[in-house]
Length: 291
Image 1 (cartoon, one colour):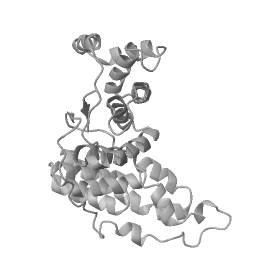
Image 2 (image 1 turned 45 degrees about the vertical axis):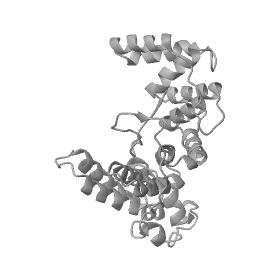
Image 3 (image 1 turned 90 degrees about the vertical axis):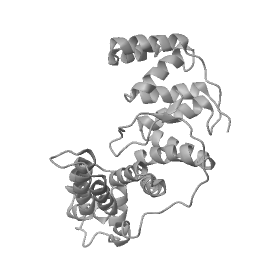
C-alpha cells in the first residue's frame, strides 16, 4: 500500500516494477503540446456526414462528434460501429487506420511479429495512430515518451487522451501529476475519480491509496476499502490483498471478507500465500503523508 504503479499502456497493462508512491517534487517546466501535424485529424474531419440517407437518425450524427465518441474504441468495436451505416463507416475510417498503426507500434515496441524491437519506429507508429484520433495510440505514444525521459511530451498525449474520455489516459495523467507536479494533486484526484467511475481497476486502486493515505483528499479508510473492493472485483490482485486487510481490520464491513480472501488465495502460489498471510498478521495502519 506504499507504492504507486508506473503508467500503463493502452491495454491497461504495464511492464515495469512498481515505483515509490511519491518522488521528490521538482519545479514544473512548461508543458509541451502535441504538434499541429499530429492533431490534423481533429481539424480536418468533416463537420457532418455527407448526404445522409433519408430516415436514418444514425447517419445524421456529425463526423467530429462520432470520431470523439469512438476515439477510445478498439478494433472490434470500430468494426461493429462501421456496420451501422455508410456515414459511420466513412467517419470511422481514420480510426480503423489508426488500429493498423497501433498494431505495428506494439510489434516494434516489444519485438513481436517478426520485427526487431525499435522504440523509435514504435513511437512513429503510435504518433500516426494518434494523429488519426485514437486515444489508445495517444496513451502508448505518451508511455514511450515517458520511458525516453521526455515527460512533457508524454503528459501532453496523456492529457489529450484523458480529455477525450480515455480511462487509461486519465489514470496515467494522474500518476504523472503525483510524481512530478505536486501542485496538481487535486486535479490528479479528479482524473482518478473519472477513470475509477469508468471501471479502470488500476485507477480505482490508486484512488484507494490516496484515500487510505490522505493524499489530496480527506483520509477515509472506509472509502478506501470501498475502492479497494471495486478494484479487487475487477481482478486487480494488489487491491484484493488490500481489501482483505481492510476487512481484517474492520474497515468496509465484514460480509465480503471470506469471499475476497478465497479469491486471493486461489491466485497465489504456496510461498506467496504464506507471505501474504504473514503480512496480514503483521499489518499496521499507515500514517497520513504530509505535503
